[in-house]
Length: 255
Image (tube, rainbow, N blue to C red; front, side, top):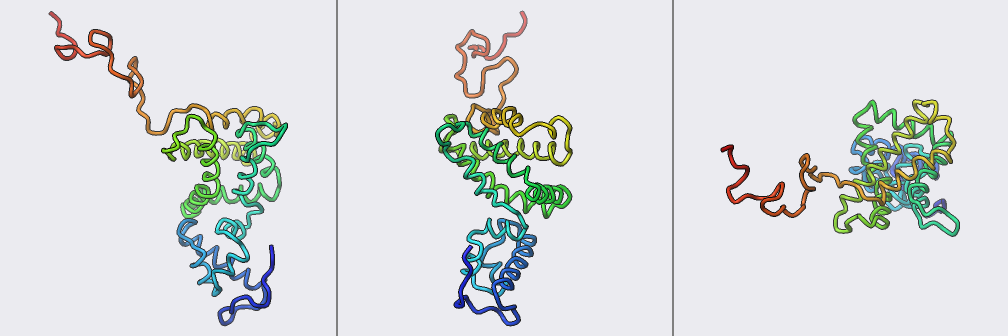
């Protein structure tokens, strides 16, 4: 990332000179702001004000709020960038399955010791602190579920473009599967899953993610049919047939 020149904005009184001091002040302010306001509530402008710098300088150093969050939380990767690459249109000779691409990208990231240690630490914090959980929910919703939902919207023939909740539901179900795999393989180290190769897991879990992303699923909130009854939204059966109307209304009493 390009370092600012000598013409960078004036810093607040008492601020250490040099890029390293400015970066440290921004990161300290970002950690406090994310902790106090959550990911959604924290803004570049508020973080810059707390750090005593111009918002343009924060953008210059970190670009986006997600990249700033990644730096503040010491994430070694930017999740949306990994997901965007994983969910991109496959090139010649590559598998066209989005589920396969997604699980392979996740396993490559998690198999890195630094990445795994950081995310496992954040997951443990989220499981024990409601404040940490709220911050992680908001971050995951924007930085991780967002790209996955957009991929589902673009690729799923059964996704209603006018109903973004369908894509969001698909993305959240994918996330539940991925977090479960993360916990089982790396946190609990459950024998068969921990010992499985990445190829085996991609072959096993990839098709499930593929169905979640682009296959037919039951939308969230859809009513279940009554036992033995027609599916919701089906036209009424003609009178005289099972489930149909009766001129007398309902079943006749026993004679």
